[in-house]
Length: 357
Image 1 (cartoon, rainbow, N blue to C red):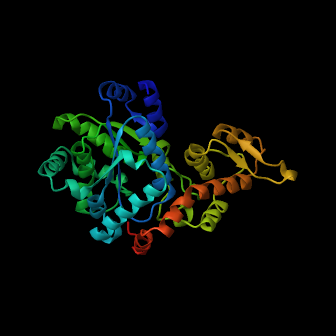
Image 2 (cartoon, helix red, strand yellow):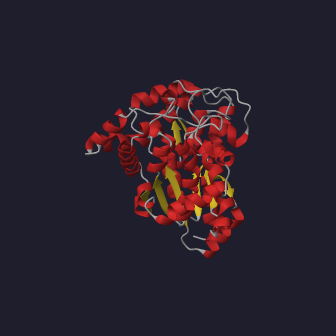
Protein backbone atom coordinates (compact mmCIF):
# COMPACT_ATOMS: atom_id res chain seq x y z
CA UNK A 1 0.00 0.00 0.00
CA UNK A 2 1.40 3.41 -0.92
CA UNK A 3 1.92 6.13 1.69
CA UNK A 4 -0.98 8.29 0.48
CA UNK A 5 -3.40 5.39 0.92
CA UNK A 6 -2.06 4.64 4.38
CA UNK A 7 -2.46 8.26 5.41
CA UNK A 8 -6.06 8.31 4.14
CA UNK A 9 -6.88 5.22 6.20
CA UNK A 10 -5.51 6.87 9.33
CA UNK A 11 -7.49 10.03 8.55
CA UNK A 12 -10.63 7.88 8.37
CA UNK A 13 -9.93 6.90 11.97
CA UNK A 14 -8.97 10.32 13.24
CA UNK A 15 -11.31 13.26 13.52
CA UNK A 16 -8.04 15.05 14.16
CA UNK A 17 -4.47 14.12 13.22
CA UNK A 18 -1.63 16.00 14.92
CA UNK A 19 0.02 16.44 12.53
CA UNK A 20 -0.63 15.05 9.05
CA UNK A 21 2.80 16.21 7.91
CA UNK A 22 4.46 14.28 10.73
CA UNK A 23 2.37 11.21 9.88
CA UNK A 24 3.59 11.31 6.27
CA UNK A 25 7.20 11.62 7.44
CA UNK A 26 6.68 8.73 9.85
CA UNK A 27 5.40 6.45 7.09
CA UNK A 28 8.30 7.53 4.86
CA UNK A 29 10.88 6.63 7.51
CA UNK A 30 9.34 3.67 9.33
CA UNK A 31 7.78 0.67 7.61
CA UNK A 32 5.63 -0.45 10.56
CA UNK A 33 5.22 2.34 13.13
CA UNK A 34 3.80 1.45 16.53
CA UNK A 35 0.29 2.71 17.26
CA UNK A 36 -1.45 2.28 20.57
CA UNK A 37 -4.71 2.72 22.40
CA UNK A 38 -5.27 2.36 26.12
CA UNK A 39 -8.38 1.14 27.89
CA UNK A 40 -9.35 1.55 31.50
CA UNK A 41 -11.06 -1.65 32.75
CA UNK A 42 -14.07 -0.20 34.55
CA UNK A 43 -17.12 -2.33 33.71
CA UNK A 44 -18.92 -3.93 30.78
CA UNK A 45 -18.11 -2.58 27.32
CA UNK A 46 -20.56 -0.49 25.36
CA UNK A 47 -20.71 -0.42 21.58
CA UNK A 48 -18.31 2.52 21.18
CA UNK A 49 -15.67 0.73 23.24
CA UNK A 50 -16.28 -2.59 21.51
CA UNK A 51 -17.28 -2.26 17.86
CA UNK A 52 -16.05 1.27 17.15
CA UNK A 53 -12.68 0.58 18.75
CA UNK A 54 -12.40 -2.64 16.74
CA UNK A 55 -13.13 -0.79 13.49
CA UNK A 56 -10.48 1.82 14.27
CA UNK A 57 -7.80 -0.65 15.36
CA UNK A 58 -8.32 -2.78 12.25
CA UNK A 59 -7.94 0.28 10.02
CA UNK A 60 -4.69 1.22 11.73
CA UNK A 61 -3.42 -2.32 11.17
CA UNK A 62 -4.50 -2.14 7.53
CA UNK A 63 -2.42 1.03 7.30
CA UNK A 64 0.54 -1.24 8.21
CA UNK A 65 0.93 -0.17 11.82
CA UNK A 66 1.88 -2.50 14.62
CA UNK A 67 -0.78 -2.07 17.28
CA UNK A 68 -0.43 -2.19 21.05
CA UNK A 69 -3.50 -2.26 23.32
CA UNK A 70 -2.68 -1.23 26.87
CA UNK A 71 -4.91 -2.57 29.63
CA UNK A 72 -4.56 0.42 31.95
CA UNK A 73 -5.31 -1.46 35.16
CA UNK A 74 -3.12 0.66 37.40
CA UNK A 75 -4.68 3.77 35.89
CA UNK A 76 -8.18 2.47 36.69
CA UNK A 77 -6.93 1.75 40.21
CA UNK A 78 -5.56 5.29 40.55
CA UNK A 79 -8.90 6.59 39.23
CA UNK A 80 -10.81 4.60 41.89
CA UNK A 81 -12.74 2.56 39.32
CA UNK A 82 -14.59 -0.52 40.59
CA UNK A 83 -14.07 0.78 44.11
CA UNK A 84 -10.31 0.71 43.67
CA UNK A 85 -10.28 -3.11 43.72
CA UNK A 86 -7.29 -4.07 41.58
CA UNK A 87 -8.32 -7.74 41.31
CA UNK A 88 -11.72 -6.77 39.91
CA UNK A 89 -10.07 -4.31 37.55
CA UNK A 90 -7.75 -7.02 36.19
CA UNK A 91 -10.63 -9.46 35.68
CA UNK A 92 -12.50 -6.75 33.81
CA UNK A 93 -9.46 -6.32 31.56
CA UNK A 94 -9.59 -10.07 30.79
CA UNK A 95 -13.29 -9.75 29.92
CA UNK A 96 -12.66 -6.80 27.56
CA UNK A 97 -10.08 -8.76 25.60
CA UNK A 98 -12.59 -11.61 25.20
CA UNK A 99 -15.16 -9.16 23.78
CA UNK A 100 -12.70 -7.96 21.15
CA UNK A 101 -11.93 -11.57 20.23
CA UNK A 102 -15.63 -12.11 19.60
CA UNK A 103 -16.32 -8.98 17.57
CA UNK A 104 -13.61 -9.23 14.96
CA UNK A 105 -10.56 -7.30 16.14
CA UNK A 106 -7.49 -8.45 14.19
CA UNK A 107 -5.85 -9.95 17.25
CA UNK A 108 -3.13 -11.63 15.19
CA UNK A 109 -1.69 -8.15 14.77
CA UNK A 110 -2.45 -6.69 18.20
CA UNK A 111 -0.19 -6.98 21.22
CA UNK A 112 -1.91 -6.68 24.59
CA UNK A 113 0.12 -5.16 27.40
CA UNK A 114 -1.01 -4.57 30.96
CA UNK A 115 0.07 -1.71 33.19
CA UNK A 116 1.45 -4.16 35.71
CA UNK A 117 3.81 -5.40 32.98
CA UNK A 118 5.53 -2.02 32.84
CA UNK A 119 5.13 -0.37 36.26
CA UNK A 120 7.91 -2.52 37.73
CA UNK A 121 10.42 -1.07 35.31
CA UNK A 122 12.73 1.46 36.99
CA UNK A 123 12.78 3.74 33.97
CA UNK A 124 8.98 3.93 33.92
CA UNK A 125 8.71 5.67 37.28
CA UNK A 126 11.71 7.82 36.47
CA UNK A 127 9.80 9.06 33.43
CA UNK A 128 6.62 9.58 35.48
CA UNK A 129 8.54 11.75 37.95
CA UNK A 130 10.27 13.67 35.17
CA UNK A 131 6.91 14.47 33.59
CA UNK A 132 5.48 15.58 36.94
CA UNK A 133 8.52 17.77 37.61
CA UNK A 134 7.96 19.60 34.34
CA UNK A 135 4.28 20.30 35.04
CA UNK A 136 2.29 22.18 37.63
CA UNK A 137 -0.64 20.80 39.61
CA UNK A 138 -2.86 23.16 37.61
CA UNK A 139 -1.59 21.75 34.31
CA UNK A 140 -2.19 18.17 35.43
CA UNK A 141 -5.62 19.07 36.77
CA UNK A 142 -6.59 20.33 33.33
CA UNK A 143 -6.07 16.76 32.11
CA UNK A 144 -8.87 15.49 34.40
CA UNK A 145 -11.02 15.07 31.28
CA UNK A 146 -9.01 11.98 30.29
CA UNK A 147 -10.34 10.23 33.42
CA UNK A 148 -13.96 11.20 32.76
CA UNK A 149 -13.75 13.92 35.40
CA UNK A 150 -14.08 17.69 35.62
CA UNK A 151 -11.32 20.11 36.54
CA UNK A 152 -13.58 21.44 39.30
CA UNK A 153 -13.76 18.05 41.06
CA UNK A 154 -11.79 17.40 44.24
CA UNK A 155 -9.25 14.99 42.77
CA UNK A 156 -7.43 12.30 44.70
CA UNK A 157 -3.66 12.49 44.80
CA UNK A 158 -3.52 9.31 42.71
CA UNK A 159 -5.59 11.03 40.01
CA UNK A 160 -2.95 13.73 39.64
CA UNK A 161 -0.44 10.96 38.87
CA UNK A 162 -2.72 9.55 36.15
CA UNK A 163 -1.78 12.00 33.32
CA UNK A 164 1.91 11.54 34.10
CA UNK A 165 1.50 7.76 33.92
CA UNK A 166 -0.45 7.92 30.67
CA UNK A 167 2.17 10.15 29.04
CA UNK A 168 4.91 7.86 30.34
CA UNK A 169 3.10 4.88 28.74
CA UNK A 170 3.64 6.43 25.32
CA UNK A 171 7.40 6.67 25.81
CA UNK A 172 7.80 3.35 27.64
CA UNK A 173 5.94 1.44 24.90
CA UNK A 174 7.87 3.13 22.08
CA UNK A 175 4.67 4.56 20.61
CA UNK A 176 4.86 6.43 17.29
CA UNK A 177 1.11 7.06 16.97
CA UNK A 178 -1.14 7.70 19.97
CA UNK A 179 -4.55 6.65 18.60
CA UNK A 180 -7.11 7.42 21.28
CA UNK A 181 -10.46 9.13 21.60
CA UNK A 182 -10.89 12.88 21.39
CA UNK A 183 -11.41 12.86 25.16
CA UNK A 184 -7.73 11.86 25.55
CA UNK A 185 -6.45 14.82 23.54
CA UNK A 186 -5.14 16.84 26.49
CA UNK A 187 -2.74 14.19 27.72
CA UNK A 188 -1.53 13.46 24.19
CA UNK A 189 -0.71 17.16 23.82
CA UNK A 190 1.07 17.00 27.17
CA UNK A 191 3.17 14.10 25.86
CA UNK A 192 4.04 16.05 22.71
CA UNK A 193 5.04 19.09 24.77
CA UNK A 194 7.17 17.16 27.24
CA UNK A 195 8.89 14.85 24.71
CA UNK A 196 11.75 17.23 23.70
CA UNK A 197 12.53 17.95 27.36
CA UNK A 198 12.95 14.22 27.96
CA UNK A 199 14.92 13.61 24.78
CA UNK A 200 12.01 11.63 23.32
CA UNK A 201 10.26 11.70 19.94
CA UNK A 202 6.90 13.45 19.83
CA UNK A 203 4.08 11.01 19.05
CA UNK A 204 1.74 11.63 16.14
CA UNK A 205 -1.72 11.90 17.69
CA UNK A 206 -4.83 10.47 16.04
CA UNK A 207 -8.04 11.31 17.90
CA UNK A 208 -11.13 9.38 16.93
CA UNK A 209 -14.77 10.46 17.16
CA UNK A 210 -16.70 9.97 20.40
CA UNK A 211 -19.99 8.18 19.69
CA UNK A 212 -23.00 9.98 21.18
CA UNK A 213 -25.34 8.54 23.75
CA UNK A 214 -28.83 7.73 22.49
CA UNK A 215 -30.63 10.40 24.52
CA UNK A 216 -31.59 13.91 23.46
CA UNK A 217 -28.49 16.12 23.67
CA UNK A 218 -28.76 18.76 26.39
CA UNK A 219 -28.19 22.43 25.60
CA UNK A 220 -24.50 23.09 26.11
CA UNK A 221 -22.35 26.20 25.97
CA UNK A 222 -19.38 24.10 24.86
CA UNK A 223 -18.59 23.79 21.16
CA UNK A 224 -16.47 21.58 18.92
CA UNK A 225 -14.46 18.83 20.58
CA UNK A 226 -15.49 19.87 24.09
CA UNK A 227 -19.15 19.52 23.18
CA UNK A 228 -18.62 16.14 21.52
CA UNK A 229 -16.87 14.89 24.63
CA UNK A 230 -19.72 16.11 26.84
CA UNK A 231 -22.23 14.21 24.68
CA UNK A 232 -20.28 10.94 24.42
CA UNK A 233 -21.84 7.60 25.30
CA UNK A 234 -21.42 6.70 28.94
CA UNK A 235 -21.96 3.48 30.86
CA UNK A 236 -23.18 5.64 33.75
CA UNK A 237 -26.31 6.25 31.64
CA UNK A 238 -27.12 2.66 30.64
CA UNK A 239 -30.47 3.55 29.09
CA UNK A 240 -28.66 5.62 26.43
CA UNK A 241 -25.82 3.16 25.78
CA UNK A 242 -25.90 -0.18 24.01
CA UNK A 243 -23.64 -2.75 25.63
CA UNK A 244 -21.87 -5.50 23.73
CA UNK A 245 -23.88 -8.28 25.38
CA UNK A 246 -27.26 -6.53 25.52
CA UNK A 247 -30.07 -8.80 24.35
CA UNK A 248 -31.72 -8.20 20.97
CA UNK A 249 -34.81 -6.91 22.77
CA UNK A 250 -32.75 -4.50 24.89
CA UNK A 251 -31.09 -3.14 21.75
CA UNK A 252 -34.48 -2.71 20.10
CA UNK A 253 -35.98 -0.85 23.05
CA UNK A 254 -33.01 1.47 23.45
CA UNK A 255 -33.00 2.43 19.77
CA UNK A 256 -36.81 2.79 19.64
CA UNK A 257 -36.49 5.29 22.50
CA UNK A 258 -33.50 7.05 20.95
CA UNK A 259 -33.53 10.70 19.96
CA UNK A 260 -34.06 10.84 16.18
CA UNK A 261 -35.95 13.97 15.04
CA UNK A 262 -37.26 14.19 11.49
CA UNK A 263 -35.05 16.01 8.96
CA UNK A 264 -32.19 16.38 11.45
CA UNK A 265 -28.81 14.73 10.91
CA UNK A 266 -26.59 16.76 13.23
CA UNK A 267 -26.63 15.61 16.86
CA UNK A 268 -28.76 12.62 15.85
CA UNK A 269 -27.36 9.56 17.68
CA UNK A 270 -29.12 7.04 15.42
CA UNK A 271 -27.37 8.54 12.41
CA UNK A 272 -24.07 8.40 14.33
CA UNK A 273 -24.54 4.64 14.60
CA UNK A 274 -25.21 4.49 10.87
CA UNK A 275 -22.15 6.54 9.96
CA UNK A 276 -19.49 5.26 12.33
CA UNK A 277 -20.51 1.61 12.77
CA UNK A 278 -23.12 0.21 10.41
CA UNK A 279 -21.81 1.55 7.08
CA UNK A 280 -18.29 0.55 8.18
CA UNK A 281 -19.49 -3.06 8.34
CA UNK A 282 -22.19 -3.27 5.66
CA UNK A 283 -21.81 -1.81 2.13
CA UNK A 284 -25.58 -1.75 1.58
CA UNK A 285 -28.38 -1.15 4.08
CA UNK A 286 -31.82 -2.47 3.23
CA UNK A 287 -34.69 -0.55 4.78
CA UNK A 288 -37.57 -2.99 4.97
CA UNK A 289 -41.00 -1.43 4.43
CA UNK A 290 -44.46 -2.61 3.35
CA UNK A 291 -45.32 -1.95 -0.29
CA UNK A 292 -47.84 0.70 0.72
CA UNK A 293 -44.98 2.74 2.23
CA UNK A 294 -42.74 2.37 -0.81
CA UNK A 295 -41.38 -1.15 -0.31
CA UNK A 296 -37.83 -2.14 0.55
CA UNK A 297 -35.11 0.40 -0.12
CA UNK A 298 -31.42 -0.39 -0.67
CA UNK A 299 -29.03 2.39 0.39
CA UNK A 300 -25.39 2.20 -0.58
CA UNK A 301 -23.85 5.09 1.38
CA UNK A 302 -24.30 7.23 4.47
CA UNK A 303 -24.59 10.31 2.25
CA UNK A 304 -27.49 8.72 0.37
CA UNK A 305 -29.22 7.88 3.66
CA UNK A 306 -28.90 11.50 4.81
CA UNK A 307 -30.18 12.85 1.50
CA UNK A 308 -33.29 10.65 1.55
CA UNK A 309 -33.95 11.41 5.21
CA UNK A 310 -33.72 15.17 4.72
CA UNK A 311 -36.12 14.84 1.76
CA UNK A 312 -38.71 13.04 3.95
CA UNK A 313 -38.33 9.86 1.88
CA UNK A 314 -37.56 7.82 5.02
CA UNK A 315 -39.38 7.95 8.36
CA UNK A 316 -37.40 7.99 11.66
CA UNK A 317 -38.97 4.67 12.68
CA UNK A 318 -37.73 3.08 9.45
CA UNK A 319 -34.20 4.26 10.26
CA UNK A 320 -34.47 3.01 13.84
CA UNK A 321 -35.73 -0.40 12.77
CA UNK A 322 -32.93 -0.73 10.23
CA UNK A 323 -30.17 0.33 12.64
CA UNK A 324 -31.61 -2.06 15.24
CA UNK A 325 -31.48 -4.98 12.80
CA UNK A 326 -27.90 -4.37 11.69
CA UNK A 327 -26.66 -3.59 15.21
CA UNK A 328 -28.07 -6.89 16.43
CA UNK A 329 -26.35 -8.70 13.57
CA UNK A 330 -23.03 -7.27 14.78
CA UNK A 331 -23.67 -8.06 18.44
CA UNK A 332 -25.02 -11.56 17.90
CA UNK A 333 -21.56 -13.23 17.61
CA UNK A 334 -20.53 -11.61 20.89
CA UNK A 335 -23.67 -12.80 22.67
CA UNK A 336 -23.21 -16.34 21.33
CA UNK A 337 -19.51 -16.34 22.24
CA UNK A 338 -20.25 -15.68 25.89
CA UNK A 339 -23.23 -18.05 25.93
CA UNK A 340 -21.27 -21.00 24.56
CA UNK A 341 -17.76 -20.47 25.91
CA UNK A 342 -16.18 -20.85 29.32
CA UNK A 343 -16.07 -17.05 29.47
CA UNK A 344 -19.77 -16.89 30.43
CA UNK A 345 -18.76 -17.04 34.09
CA UNK A 346 -16.30 -14.17 33.56
CA UNK A 347 -19.02 -12.02 32.00
CA UNK A 348 -21.42 -12.65 34.89
CA UNK A 349 -18.68 -11.87 37.38
CA UNK A 350 -17.89 -8.53 35.71
CA UNK A 351 -21.60 -7.68 35.51
CA UNK A 352 -21.80 -8.18 39.29
CA UNK A 353 -19.12 -5.59 40.01
CA UNK A 354 -20.39 -2.27 41.33
CA UNK A 355 -19.54 0.51 38.89
CA UNK A 356 -17.93 3.51 40.58
CA UNK A 357 -16.79 6.82 39.19
